[in-house]
Image (cartoon, rainbow, N blue to C red; front, side, top):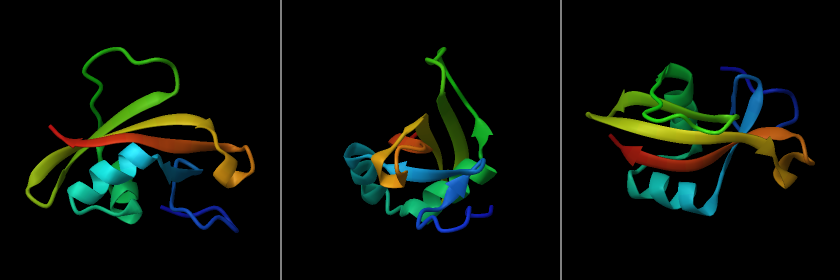
Length: 94
């Protein structure tokens, strides 16, 4: 996993990872930080249960003894000057 130059955020598939307020709350409740989320996205597997709208991805991985699902959406973000980023919508145990 390599961060693009000058981005203060971890990246996945070449785009920065940004947490929403809800995503940050859910991650914090599970004891995760943004670097943990990046590791789950990088090392996890696609695990969509139902069809999602275009640009939404679900990745699942075993993490600290439990299986977690990270749901992200590829969208422009003001945190990276309007460029596309992976926005973490939710983090939850499976």
